[in-house]
Length: 82
Image (cartoon, rainbow, N blue to C red; front, side, top):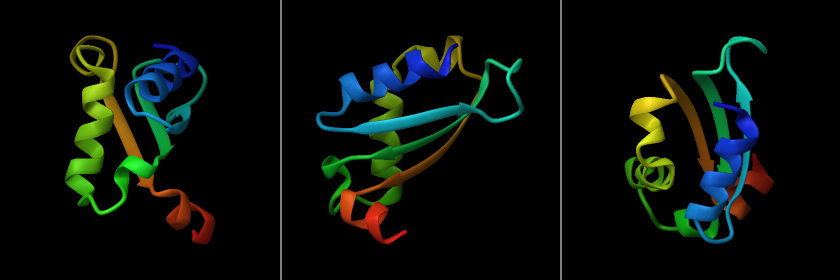
């Protein structure tokens, strides 16, 4: 799956989110991805819940098109201070 398509799904599925997705193992590996997602929706949520929001936004693609997804999730304030 193309990183841009994954970014779009995340951004459409989590209101106000900004996602940056890259191929984790190089340009020819389409099913091992790494994503950085910044969203107000993560505020006050534990890490597991933050990741579940991303998985929910990706829906069935997590079982059909994406073999592995390394996630980094932040609130806007956390991202600014990272």
